[in-house]
Length: 98
Image 1: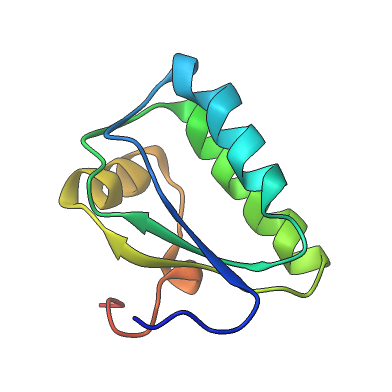
Image 2: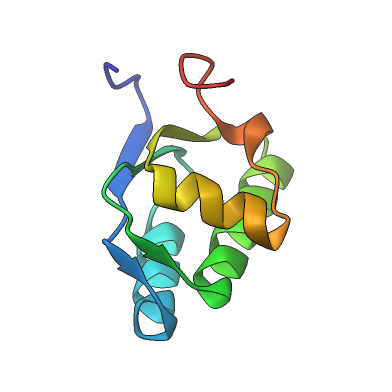
């Protein structure tokens, strides 16, 4: 997916656990003011705290009227979201929506 003007991309770590939550928050806050595209294709494990960071960022971007989407998600990422009851379908790029 080509990058649009003012758009930044972040690739998530393979393990999104307690140790990664603070780092992830810092990376996302450094992108505030830009449209953000997240690549979660390499994610193997997701913890609840990182999910909270991601969902809080999605809400912040929505309030700022900026784009916050996932370009790619791994099966592990998608299954974990479903298992914990987090619906990210509205954040998925239209190419990967089911």
